[in-house]
Length: 157
Image (cartoon, rainbow, N blue to C red; front, top):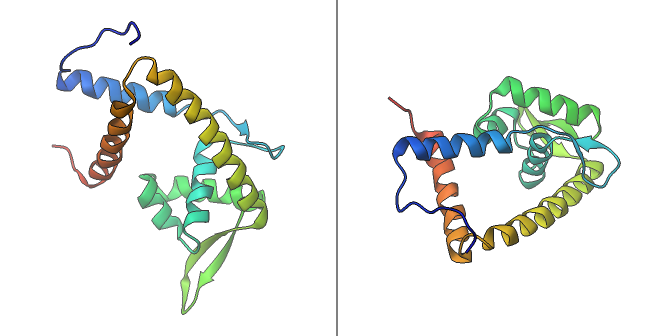
């Protein structure tokens, strides 16, 4: 499979370096037209998807779930509100908590975004299968899911 040199084990530093390069690669913030004629970066559309999946969520909860500052999420939400993708409402019985909801326009973008990501990740997984057994790819995603959850709870020395 492929011509990538395989190591039986990586050092802890090599593992951290691989993760940092992966994070940097996935942090490229180039706006994309997901099929609606408007451009959004991947963080914006994933925040929108999180709102679609969790109607009534607060900015604080989004920030916690995405390991971002409340200020950073507030800026993303501000853009999504201005572009008509989400709207803010009050939580019933609690006038202090501002809740986020997707508009029909936001729901349409969310559908296009999920189609775009699904298509592109399907293609990328096919490319990876040329180098890595399929079962290992799915194990990798299980590990990354646990990694993400634990890294949000873990406090390094």
